[in-house]
Image (cartoon, rainbow, N blue to C red; front, side, top):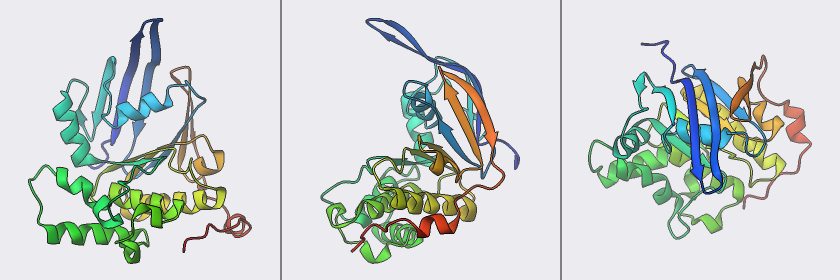
Length: 252
């Protein structure tokens, strides 16, 4: 169905059992995210936002409730089934870039293609798709550079290309600007916003930075394992003059 939510969480709970006792990380969370939305999740340390993102990305399973991803109930799936869903539907962007240090940008971007569910892919097609993704983030000319030959902002754009290469319906970003300076952070989140607006890919991003969250259409604030506020922004983004006043990261 065209208007079917990409993410539909109904009364989601998550409990961790530890030596010191049980921790209720999520307590009856209800969230719906429509196709093409860009949503920020904010909250203090221990609020449950990272647990929420892990469940959204099928990296962890809820203790209770129901989670529908693109209309498919993934709540009771096995680890192998969840891995297949991740490969088919989700791209990930991490704070630490998570690039393989001894392989080129091109090979890093190709990594998700090795796990494509429709079997092995020809090298020529893998090269073409990876180069297309790198072109989209403005780094085609750096395809043979190693990560240590790239700036922090460039490394995160390689990571964005890697998240894009399988044409996911959902991209999850976990503090994607946390390792970058202010200006580079804004440039990176502009790339993510462009991806959302032009490719119509749904984006859910955990961030603790209000100026980064401003790029999203909605801000969901989590506190003590519950949704405290779900705010819709009328004019996402940052004024161009704010960007001009910030120092630029050296990229050569």
